[in-house]
Image (cartoon, rainbow, N blue to C red; front, side, top):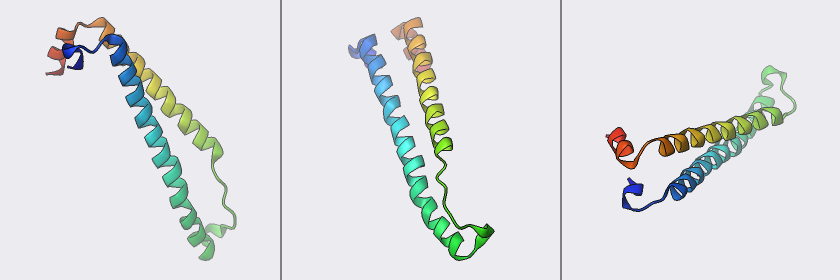
Length: 99
């Protein structure tokens, strides 16, 4: 719809990339940051109550890296698919497709 009022293909691609980057970074901040902050009190509680013989906390660096890489790859694939769709179809076809 924004292209119907003058947005160019390049501007649309940049907007989609920035929007995807915003959502990817937000997801990482909430999942990694929030998850880490929520996990530490759970660890302290489990250590205090001697659950599963827990004594030390080990931060899952490998899992965090894998999750970050997967999110970035999904974002890249989505932007590529969307840009292909935009270049393939005219504005009229895209507006008709949305309805």
